[in-house]
Every structure is written in C-alpha cells, then in structure tokens.
Image (cartoon, rainbow, N blue to C red):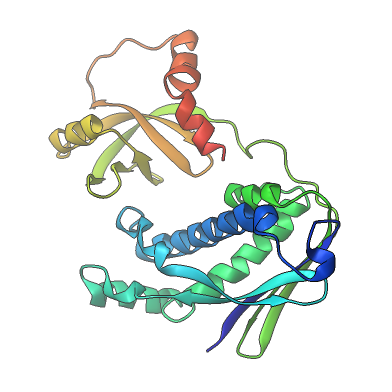
Length: 273
C-alpha cells in the first residue's frame, strides 16, 4: 500500500521559479519535518502500548523517502514508510497485539502523517499544538507565499493549503511545579532513557530523571513517595523524591523560582523547542 506525502512550496525563494529545490534554503526545515513526523509516531506508539520509555527509539524506523522533486513551483513527493519496527522489541507478540487493538499495526505511518498535516494547519493558523511542527515551519525560508500538503493512501487523500502563516509565540504553556503522593511503577536507565514513572490517584506520569534519582526510586519502590515535579504541557521532570511522611521544610517562593527557572533553566529551554 503506497503511502505518499506531497508538498508544494510557492514564493520568492531562490530556485522555486526554476522548479528546483535549494538544500541551503530547505535542508534544515526538511530535517525538522522528519523530527516532527517521528515524534508524532512515537506518541501514537506510546499511547497504544503504555510504554513511553522503550519506544522512544522505535519511531526512528519511521522515515520519509524522497521519490521526486515536483514541478510547478517546487516541492517534494516522499514515501511514508516503517522499516523493521515490529522486530525490535521484547515480548513482540504482546506488542503486536496492542498495535492491533489500537488500529496501528499497518497504519502507523499513515496515522502519523495525517496527524502531522493537522498539526501543520493548526500551527500555521496560530494555534499552539505541536512544538516540533512549529520548529519546522519557522525553519522554512523567507519569501514563501503558499504551501500545499497532501497525504494519499489507497485512493484516499487529505489536503492542507496554507497562505501566510501566523505562528504562535512561545510555548503553549508555562512550566508549573507541584508535589504529590505517588507509587513508583517503573524506571528507565542507560543505555536507554533515564526516567521514573509514577502512578497517582488520577494520573500516571513519566518524568525525566537523573541517574541518582533513578537509584533513589529503586530504593523507595515498595512504598508511597512524595514526588516534586516540574511540568510543561505533557513534559515532566523529576526534581525531588522522598518517602511519604518524611518531614521536609516547605519551600519559599524564591526556592521554587530557583528550582524552575535557575537549576533547570537549560531543561526549560529544551522543553520550549
């Protein structure tokens, strides 16, 4: 089944009038487009399997393979593929069953491409929805006056047309800090992602964590814990972990500001991208 993404760009960009595509003008943007596509696929996998730790690398099997440079202004036609994604995980039968139940076994590339176009349309119209897509749109060269995206599969297609863009300013949400009672349900460590997964009364949250924090989580895994977390949208980072009931002086507003904007300033810059 041929899954194809076609993109047309129009405007006053060197090469477009001659139906050529400048790598200098579009190279970075195309690289960021692939990043956004893979992140969407990764999120779909994580939602289907409830395993955001091990699956971070699996979306790398998602790719866009260039088929041709389009005539008429200029653009590309690319095949949307999954390469070997179903043979690189332990408990493969369970993994495949979860994908079948979520309708993703044969449709991951297509579902991710459809979501990608929806996010491109939203971001171009000023609605903060996907920071990775926003990075792609911001990297496009100046002088574009029109864009057209078409995803086609098995005789069906979805199309998005964009004129002038009005991208959102800044991240969709400001970071917030909170401390709640959780149970530790999973951890991740090298050579994969370093994280601690926590289950509360009404949510399960996975937090980026240091090696030391992962070690402490293993020590405290058989009891309830108080976890101090900084969050921005769906991103979360563990700041402090302690046994439930352990006395700890409350933080002042100045200490909270330091934890969010001082100690983790570099993290927040990365979260905002």
